Length: 114
Image 1: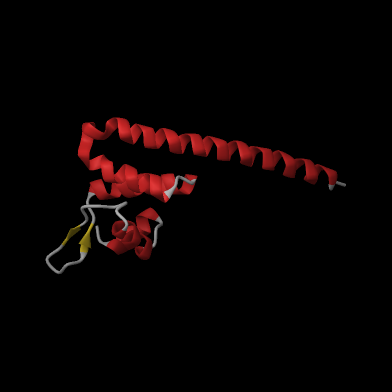
Image 2: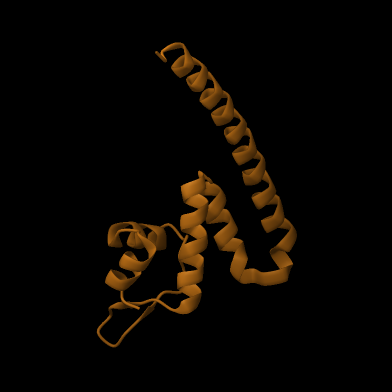
């Protein structure tokens, strides 16, 4: 797939895709004979994972480290697991904070009901 198609499918802009490639989140993007990016199914799977994690608030730093280790396979399984566990803990704490804020917001709205 070319970058325009990937952008349409993923919902990420071409600029974001190029940025993610530049910082190491997306790797091994092939080029056609004219030097145009040509994304594979594996690239697309990685992009879907990255987008999902970013939408949830996973840090760029955590994802960069994870994606750097991912191609190394089983040798980095423990390190990758630790990265994901740390990010999961951070997301859980964030969700608890958001739940508290939502409850407070609902309370304030209830005070304003007629």
